Image (cartoon, rainbow, N blue to C red; front, side, top):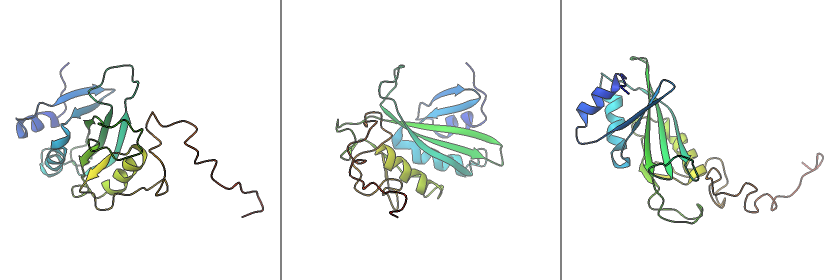
Length: 181
């Protein structure tokens, strides 16, 4: 399959030492980037006038546990980029393989990727959400703490090994009636 996305030749020329894997699904192009080079690639995509990706629209993650197709690693961090001057969109993905089997209770030293908050300030809250829900940490983030769950929440609820009924956190809440507030 030949992809004709205008950013691909620019990336290939700028990073000859990286072998990018590229896929296309329903008109959206995804570039797989080694996690240790994500910051360099993002900065280039923003600063190069041939790319001009001036907006980070989303940062999220995927847990591929029990996924039917073979994946390079269990987790992937995904950055959605948009270039308004060029009217193009691009998805970047970096794979992370956990080294601990703790169901997300303790920090895994392998689930770390560089922050892009210095490139796109909007990444600050988006990266906090990925940290909170998946336990993936962003090295260099200015304020990496939970954003949706409380500080001592036991685990990361969007991981596929997190129990659907929780780990008892619902049973610890006081039931409030309509008139008790």
